[in-house]
Image 1 (cartoon, rainbow, N blue to C red):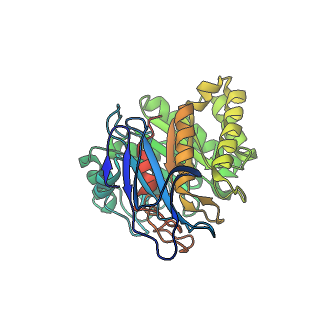
Image 2: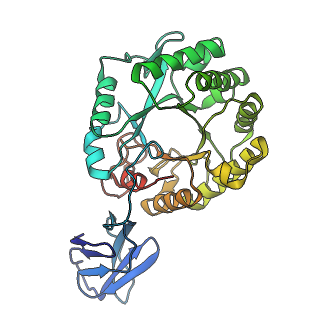
Image 3: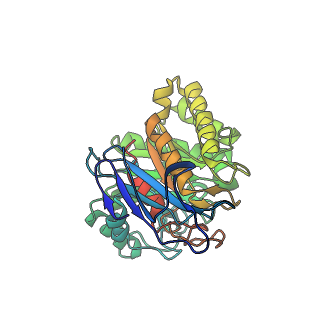
Length: 373
């Protein structure tokens, strides 16, 4: 990217080796320019809009592989600083980056921090072992806030010793949540409910919903978020039970977030994510009597950038489409797993510190930062 205006980008790239007829500049699968040289200007864009491009050389035999992608935002327009609606996950394993580095590079301000677990019984601790104050997690929170943002601690996840099964009553669990809320003077919490110990256990799942009702009553301005898995057609049986419990008890949960990955399919992860989201919308409308618009505004998407555990590919182009769809429906939340993985390692597989695909550093975070809900 050599120049940016309100309505255009000027792109330049290195010449390809071999016999080259010209170059095609792509935005997703759409050709935006065809040139014989190694630069072009893409114009006619909207001020303050974000775009991702790749370049392919071509000759009479065919096209080369795509270049690394580049994402940028035109100048001008009215922009809203990233807030809690755009808060990707960050954790203290998998080569954690400095959050202020990410804030400066991408415009993101908020992060969802994983995970608060049981430090023994019904006592909360980071990853089940680190104290709430005085350690690396406190340092990260201080850094995020100094950078103009804030954090959403996430409780639970797939593995580990969790608070839901260890706190014997909704009141005890609510008190554990409240300890973390008070420690950091929080504006939001996320309950990532998964696996057989919480999501598929009727007693524990109901305990979590009931505890969130207590938390909301005691902290009416706090945003409560609950995050769970889904199929391509929408959330399954256990999510339906959770939603119905929240409706019948008046738990007043603010955001129901699906994780549209690891559902064993979805060659086009944009289409699968939209399908899963529409399934969630239908469930919420039925349970709460909401309109389409009301349901969308209580929904969230938390994707997995690059390769998922089941090798599903959420590409940069797909994530931009997902962001655009979520924006068009005014969803309440857009997140992904994770900032730690928002780095390239094409062919690297599914690991905790890179995406497994070719991309630029922090590219998914930069796209997410433009989501305003």
